[in-house]
Amino acid sequence: MGLEHALPLDALADVAATARSSGVTRPIFHSDRVGGIYAGQVSVDHRKSHGLYLTPIPVADFMANQVTATRDTLRVLDPAAGAGILLCAVVESLVQRPHHTCHVELVAYEVDPELVKILGEVLRDLQMWAIGHRVEITYEIICRDFVLEHASALRSMGGFFPHLRSEKAFDLVIANPPYFKLNKADPRAQAAAAVVHGQPNIYGLFMAVGAAMLKDGGEFIFITPRSFASGPYFRAFREHFFACIRPQAVHVFGSRRDAFSRDAVLQENVILKGIREDDWPARKGAKLMTISSSQGVRDLETPDQRVVSIDSVLDLKSREKVLRLPVSDAEDELVQIVDSWPGSLKIYGLQISTGPVVPFRATAFVEKVGSVPGSHVPLLWMNHVRSMAVRWPLGRHKPEYIKHVPESQPLLVPNRNYVLLRRFSAKEEERRLVAGPYLARSSQALMVGLENHLNYVYRPGGTLTEDETFGLAALFNSSLLDTYFRTTNGNTQVSATELRTMPLPPREIIVAIGRRARALGGALGDIDALVLELTGTMQVREKAVARG
Image (cartoon, rainbow, N blue to C red; front, side, top):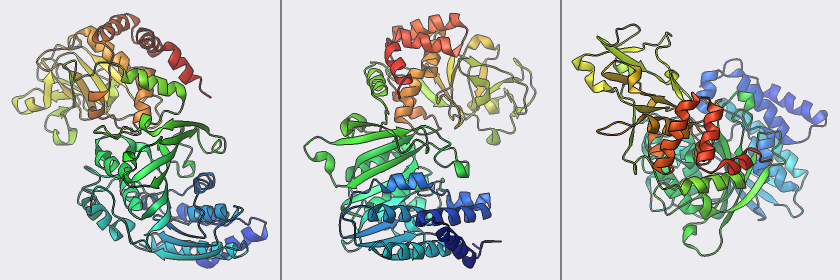
């Protein structure tokens, strides 16, 4: 895992010396600069495979300021240390306190051997700097895979993540872990089978093992994607994690671009601060947490904040144990209104499924030209579905036809009324839910093909009325349900499981919305106002839009 054209260590030392001579005395500046130089030299593939997205200084400072431990000696772990920017931020924060810690033991894991060399130089610099502030720093750098090193913490599930021996456990675990999906055959994924379902994202494994490394009362501070907070893939993780980590604060970034803009990362990020406290939900007494938010890094020093009951955003008695993150009182009120609705797809006898056509497995049937009706039927993809519209054909590069032959029959669905939803939203899109009404009368074909990146709502053994079709599509496209979905979901993937249980208003309201939506012709602004009017939530939504 060598690095071509890497900046030599003596050159890194020159960078540090230049920084100090120019009056830049904070070790974090040195860490940020040399880490940035290294990240700029390695390939994009290298950064992706290592999840190498360096923490910006303001984010590192914000995380370090969450630390409240006051012991004379602190053991601090960073399981994905990179160039050491979080460890620098923690030490710098500690020395600024009136009665600061005297001795800090740092343990840093990093799997990239070249980055380990840089990390060693940064921590030596930090150690020398701390001496001038009457703080003794000792550190250990471990160039091994953190998850595999402590895989027993994932396999030994006894209700909680098992503790280390007290002398080995940590007062603080702080991290910006890598994030990328693991192949099911990866030994780390196999070790985590009890914690994370399916094809896990590695950051969840870092969170799980990090929780196991803490002492009772130890602090957990991670910046991660928001996707752990909801969805079926992380359900088992949430069950075990929130049984032993009591959340104290969550910070939500409004912008997907800003937190890691240097690396051009589009990701919905949160910073979670928690305390290791086994079986805390069973204890009596008020349990509060802070939800803060900023648009990005620039306004991180002046975030909006609200204190909420943990029970109001994390229902640990429910099966899914979703962590909701409404960032304003108005959003909280909207969530409560939607939760009060009596219906759901399941209650109304409707079903939602994923399109059965996987193009690379159906190459014998999918084609760019065809005859409808006749030898072919329409094949609909995500790009055919717009808000309140389904447009086919588009005449673009993707095949838009699928052969109607006996062999392709299992891939097709009857030509009926459906609500089509994109399973994935582009990360920069304003709305998470994008739904279009598909009407059977739009095609003379007996069947239709739905590509695998679409979800579709239907009535088993029957068909949706056109008013139901338009009404459901309008609801899914509304700012009301988009706000609800965003408070409970941090994924770009729109899960059929979550839509299946999402609350819906009474059926007569859905039909009324659909009847009037058909007359509006699909203009999204008009549709949004219509949904807010007929569900009685216009004033609450206006408060949510006007927050801040």
